[in-house]
Image (tube, rainbow, N blue to C red):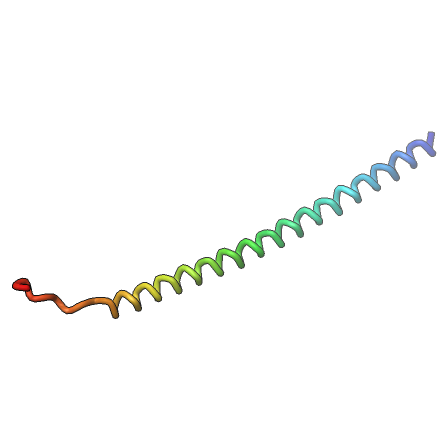
Length: 71
């Protein structure tokens, strides 16, 4: 009977260890995915800001002086 309990306890500890390592793996994977998403969002934000700067720069140079309404 003691051997059965000892074996059951060993199996339970092994299962808990596997679950623990699996949980750690999932957390590390989620952190890496989040970090990658943050980097992509930051790059997209910088590109968007650059587009607006380019647009504003082109827009300021493209403004014509008002034409004479008689023309």
